Image 1 (spheres, one colour):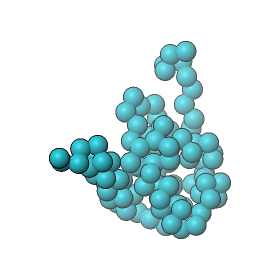
Image 2: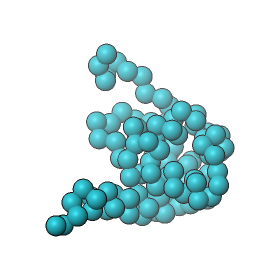
Image 3: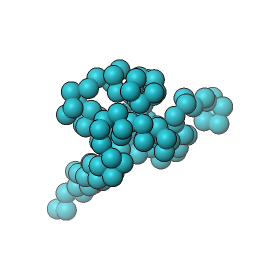
Image 4: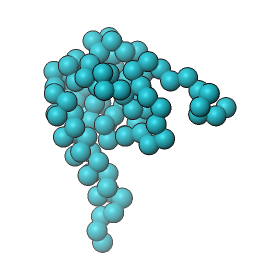
Length: 99
């Protein structure tokens, strides 16, 4: 089955380059706040499956979905962006420790 024929859940967009750092940032903030995936998904008006795909870095949320997730977490889009940037830098440093 080609990517073009696979369905994309609402609130996500197809991407050949998912952003796992963003998903990890969402997961960290959710866990820090003591919120379950089910509760966050409900508050953000998305399915638990969609949230799981985003957190695992298998899909990128649309702008509207990301705004809903941020609001449900009590965070700003900037907060999520900064946390994702930290995750991205951390991953890059692990891959290239600068021997």
